[in-house]
Amino acid sequence: GGVMASSKKLILSLATISCLSSLALANISGPTYAIPYNQGNNYYYTLLGYYPNTQIRINGNGSTNTLYLGRYAYINYNTDGKAILANAGSNQHLTIDKITNKGIVNGALNVQNQGNIDNGSITIHDIDNQGYIRNVYIGVWKENQGSIKLDSFKNSGLIYNTSDNGILFEGKDVVIDKFINEKIIASNDSTKASLVIGQANNRNDNITIKLLLNKGLIGGEQSKYGILFNADPKNKGTDKFSVNHLINTGVIYGEDVSILFSNATIKNFLNTGTIEAHGQRAINAYNQTEIQHFINSGTIESKSNAAILFQQPKTITNILNTGMISGTVGVAIDTATITNFINTGTIKATHKQTGAVLLATLKNTPLQIENLINTGSIDSQSHGIMIEVGGTINNFYNNGTIKTQGHGITFATAPGASDN
Image (tube, rainbow, N blue to C red):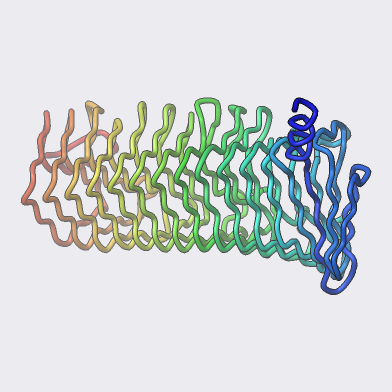
């Protein structure tokens, strides 16, 4: 009975690597194959579960590959930390049908170019992490010409890096259809982010994400950023990040900033969960960021700064708050054009000298809101709405509550100064 039980447990602890080939035999190298099996053009490799200091490599021009790590699988790689490495060289095309991890990858999952390449492409249909991966890198680095297409990335396990970013995407031509987090993605480095889109070092990134959905936790108390759209601050406009739908129903937390948008174009932003920052803003959008629809029905909170700062964005078309926005300033808008700003929820501010809604013109550039509508609550320790010189509200409608220690609406000649 004991021997049989142990045998069953051993079988369950297998890590399986399977290679499915349509054009050519896939090329996966790694641990010695324990049980080889093939059926027609399908090639399967079953491995025992524990492989320390082991790298699994996936490459091969024209090949289609599937990698499966079972529940009790364990791999790590001491040389460069890339426990799983999939790459393509110049003029090569690599297809990965599926990467599924139910075990422990105590290292990086890297999908990248192989050296300096003129052209090459990698197509990944599905990445599904149900276990632990230290960190994930998917990109074409150093301004190389190559493309990556990722149909689906799903995390229902743990991605946790103690010394760098949790997940990083970069490249001149990267398209991601679905990115879904159901559990935890975190960095434990106070200078890094849990999820990074872009590398910022004059790379000319062009990354498109059709759906970015968080149902779990992205970030942590030791992570500087929860989500970072990392455009080059010196060469504005060279990086482009596009997201059709960014939806948070879970928690996004940053010790500094929860979500930082730079050179990002967001069609629909929806928060029904919690976005919280401790040191700076919960949401900071700047450097030509464009948001079409910004909707909050959850909680957006900063413990010691503005909850939301739109800092010289390109355009913000519609802002709708039906939830709670709370910080030293609720919503600060610097130099923008906004069509509709509607509050039916609560905007709360604790600063003693400014407004719960601050319309600032720090660069002497006009700020204009076509329609500002409040049917909810604006609660401030100072003023309700502060408009600095150069700011314009064409139509203002209030059928809600503006509760303040100062004025409901005030006009300022300089930041922090009011003319009532």
